[in-house]
Image (cartoon, rainbow, N blue to C red; front, side, top):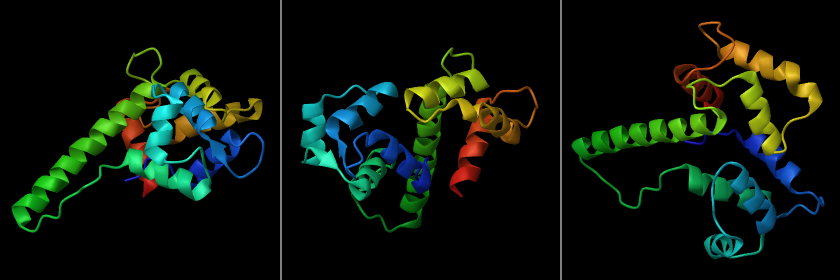
Length: 163
């Protein structure tokens, strides 16, 4: 399951592609990964992807490979399938917790508009005209109307966004 929609990934790719050549260098990709708390060297990235830059399709594939659990074996019995589904649900929940923690900068268990703005700014996805959009987005998923997102509201937002 992908936590970010393809069109959003394309926007991220375009923001990373500073020179507009249709490629994201590993340095640019490493910058993004560091901004979201992933520490990896450019050399390690190159050994993972096997090249020095990625086009959009390769970037999407890279995201898919790091955001979904790869299942190397095929299981056939219903008990094993149920076990895999439960394991995938636990992994999805764990991934959502990690994603939530990226946005919950002060660790108080809530994502405020200010925290959302700061993270989007770090990712290069924020402009001054987006302030209203930030408040509107939070309001849309803020079921208890406290002006911020708790984990359950964040989880609902993510599942509704990717459905």
